Amino acid sequence: MRKPIQANRSQFERDGFTFVHDVLSADEIEIFAPIFSEHLPADKLPPGIPDAGLNGRKTLISEHTDPRLSNLAGHTHLIEAVDTLIGPRFLIQSTSAPVITYKSPPGAERFDLGYHVDWPNNPPKPHDDRHLNCALHFSTVEPGGGALMIYPGSHRLVEKSLEDPKLRKRMLDQNFNGFPGLPEPVEVCVPAGTAVFFHSFLVHDRSENILDVPRKVLFTHYKGFDDTQQRHEWAAKATERFVQHQIDTMDERLLHLCGLDEKQ
Image 1 (cartoon, rainbow, N blue to C red):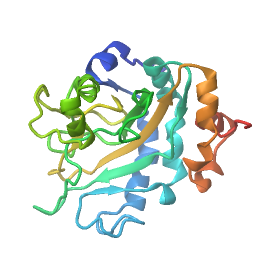
Image 2: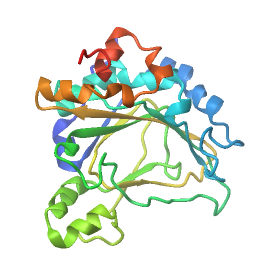
Image 3: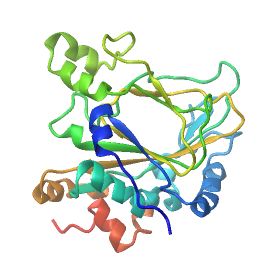
């Protein structure tokens, strides 16, 4: 029997992130991990992104997603953890994005965003801080393996700086280079099967994979609500956030978790 999922809400609120281990079983990893390289081989551009160049990081955008992967946003253990971290009233936000990061040719990797936050609106709107991001790992990430890089506690610094007229523009420009108060970044090295949940205002970036082992991650997104009316209103546009070929494969449970069963 598998151990109950352990999600640390106090750490998430304090640091803006938390690790939840053993979300995926070894059997699930064996089944789903090969799908990444099936759709995103190392020697080809990702479908729908003609300007990806020689980047080792390749994303399967929603129009080309494989529901076998994107539907894992509703995995029982992920939903268990989300409930603990942001409460019982939430929705899966959108079609999830499978990402694989190969070892790239020396000097070829582009880091267009740099350190940034994944808030859904710029400038942020009320309740944007209720969005929750998750990186579900299908491979073990060792140091130098293309890990997520995060600034612990930076979500609180961003929230505070948005209220300061002298710093607000810098926040909206996502100019975090040398920003005072940021701690040392942490390289997120975790075993396969781990979900890394992080706040929508957490400052983070990716890193280059200098190893021969591809990093395989499914990025999933959730939105928390204060009451059922907020959830109902957000569900009104759910069909705009998911691609139809994924919707066609969803069972009743997943449709409900995405807000796609709501009658307007």
